[in-house]
Length: 340
Image (tube, rainbow, N blue to C red; front, side):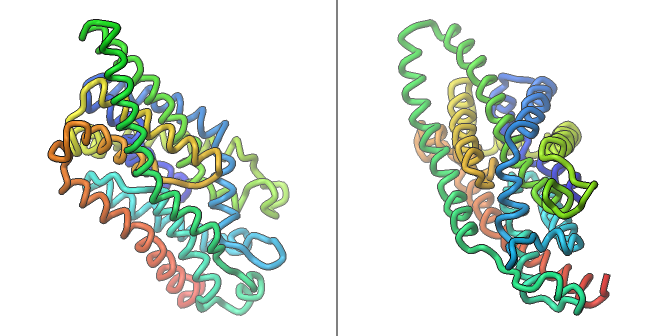
């Protein structure tokens, strides 16, 4: 199930790292995916640990310091399936949803079931005193609000500064070349941030069940190996099924040129990387959509597709709620009624 969720990240969130340069005709699809693969793997191996710990250990807690998701791994499996399924549906309809919101919502649903669901007697004894850490949830929700706003602001300012400044030092042809390479570097940074943050979302529950300190004895797996596992799955998802959402991000919100693609991509990358260092699971989808909208506003509000943004925004609100409800309902039926 963790592989399935990570595959969905590649299929949906892969566009967040390379959608802008591909949409702006700065990179071909094949070159964009190659860039994505390399830097997602680096980010997953080197930087996904903090977010992994937050998702796997920080949201659902239990008295005594033990991790309830380790004790009842069935609920962790259901949460991963719920999050992955919702992202699959969204990818099918070319909607850049937040995998972070899906997995966080699913983990909340798992915590609510362990707290209030109809657990079998033996299982209920092993996870007594379970609760959802509201402080962590509020921090994550605040980060979700700030992510698109911060990305849009950074992209808007960056475009204004870089575009006006560079126009003084070269011809239009030279500027295009500079922005082309700058966008490639920004995409590499965004792909690294994707591996550091969103891979941590996909593998957080894997870390909770089989990671170091998970009470699994000799089965314990290091954070680096879990991160690489998630990174490989993300890359496979990007290679096999990311073209639909890349079309939406790169072309559906506003038209992009070399200078606007650079500003959008770099603004999103800075935002996601910042939250990754804080260990907060944020949405790369929110970041890149905010960045693309921010540079679109340079030409005025009319240049931005409000209909497309409204549709995307609605999914951001519904996504974690659906993931939480879906996880709770499936857990209630599978564990509480059927008794698996």
